[in-house]
Length: 567
Image (cartoon, rainbow, N blue to C red; front, side, top):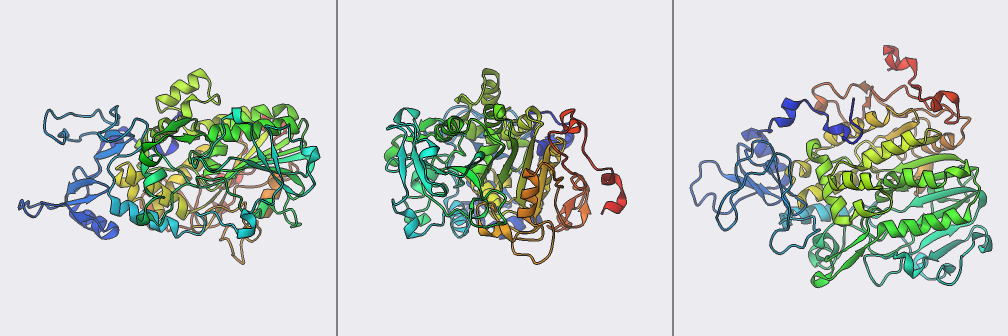
């Protein structure tokens, strides 16, 4: 039985958790070939019989000792069990880190709150350039869509009632100055988008757009030709095309007649932070205000929709993580509307590797973004958050348990390329070498472990798609996607049909995945390929969330789940 606050991927035997992986000479050579690792300077000159290899600023002999032991996280050092004492750069007394603990303080030249060390620039550059080549990452928009022809409404001048907005037209709503809403780029004003539809149906969505967590990602990368002037997060409020579940002209869209509130993403903090950091040019302060941005939109929506029959809440990519963190608070705020409600995060599960440092790596981001100090958390939750015991995973589980009359559903590709790239980028800047080299099969296995923990809750379902596609719901391919791929000719149910069944409480959608059923706890998962389905997830279905069965918290696992013929 998993602890509520423990990430499911962290479940290991004590002996396995304590054991430090030791790479063989062959494995180290493979790592060199895979990452293009460089021999450390001076190794040959010293005539060492065991030449070193380095990546992300971490070096090790070719037997792998120490290669995974020194992982710098949150301006400190994270050392695995059994690591040797580490010598200070200028000599002095060596220190031995407690297993899995962080050292406080910031290294020379770094400000408190930075999540960074001294990354291997060439490796990070390679990862960033690979990231920037992904068509799903950089917001796609046309020249016409960036012009200021969209009607605007400023809450500083009035309430911006939705009843005054023209049906089917996208409006930009700018919050009051006292809301504190802001973008990282001070020249860009934050706004959220509104399209008036059925006043009894609301879709609230968090936009995606990457993540920034230090000076390196906020300023050095976007201001450098080295990185093609790109940042791993969107720092300006930018309109992106309204397709997929936003498309009000497609008869196949179950949400085409909904009123829509779309929260722009320009804070780099998955809508959870509330702080300022010296991450700007010449270490100037930048605003990390994702919480305030989202809160301005949520408060406005609460005032505009006093009664609802249907409510959909979710987000894409970074917005997916944000919607998981916000879910319990949003659902509680809208609970008196008594709407048929669906929570639909799209394409980000937050898997990090190695599992044993998942919570502490996430905790580094908590502090960098000021996530633990926002009004979303009560006093006890804030304390657990500061102690890295309050994760996105735990909050999402809380939401499922506190709102049994709500359906929770997650969409994800089995080997989502953007999620894997972001994991590698974060790991590289945090000296987490094992995270840098995480392979696709391991990512998919660990994602299934997260889903298994969610599947313990009777009001959760998932939809898994073969391939590497990142995000579905705000793209035209949402209408063509099946479990076999974004443009597959076979496979059912189609994604949009499955989404429609979620919101129709008369329907009974199922956990969806096509492929051979495999137990992910078996050995040799590296040889299972990337198109299997975890047998521990299959055979689940979602009854009407308003039914007595679900509200009494009975299991909804289909009896065929234990029947071998189910495969």
